[in-house]
Amino acid sequence: MSNENLTPEQVLAANGESFFWAKRFLGSRMGYDAARLYSFCRLLDDMADGDIINGPERLQVIYNELSKGNFKADPVLENFSPLFQDYDLDCEVVLALIDGLLDDQRTPVLISSEQDLLRYAYKVAGTVGLMMCSVLKCNNFAAKKHAIDLGIAMQLTNIARDVLEDAQMGRRYIPGDWVNNMSPEEIVEASNDPNSDESILIQDGIKRLLDMAEIFYRSGHHGLAYLPFRAHLSISVAAKVYRQIGVQIDNSGLNWYDGRQSTSKLSKIICTIKATFNLLSRASIRKKSHNTSLHSKLEGLPFVG
Image (cartoon, rainbow, N blue to C red; front, side):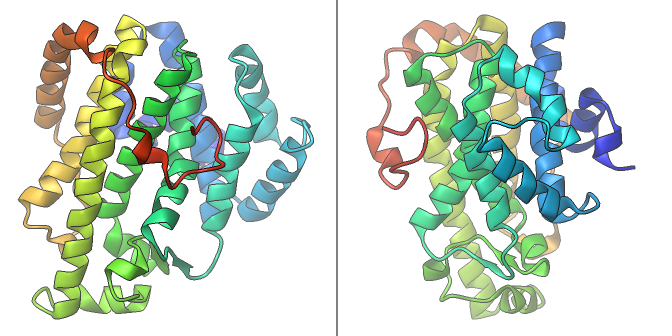
């Protein structure tokens, strides 16, 4: 069944395992609105991937009409309108998200540099962090910078996890200048020989992705104290569960050719306990200022600076 036929909470449960686990700590109203936001972003992603009939064409129409302030161009956009109005979400942020998803329509998708990687991660995930910040009733400008970073960290984890799956779809998100501009087809071929120079080069690229993600996770963590108490706990849980995917990739020996990693229920429980204890440092986290160098490659994008 298409996600378009599901309720927001059903979409979250079916597609966002880590976020569905963390949602339980938000309370009913905030949790429901967070699910509404997730559902909207998921449906846009489904359109981009062609999982919804006429999805790419609908996504382009949504982009064109939203840029004019028209929320009635598509049922998905119209259903999102009340949430947009309730939390005064920034239209430029939503447009940046859609722009990133439209980038995935190129065939093949080939990220060329670290700057391209970070700008893509901002568009498809940093924007979600920005919108979630508003839904969680946190509109502090400094907090938004950290929200961007947490979204980027999660996207870098995604990319590290899905290297083979993406290559099979004609996509390479590891920067070309990290991996001798290997094509998606060459990445798929390298997966058949883990000891090849090409496979080892991909491993090195994944390690760089995970190391970069760690830097952005730390910055995201520094912004948690700006959130209301329950939101702090929920987002901390989500971040730790998601980061655990990267930890497992690293612990597996970076065996990217063995299939994607996922977290067990036990891992989620452990991450939840750690997040709960981290609340003890809530007061001290706020004192750390944002590392502006993290956004040096994001110039011109909303809320960067």
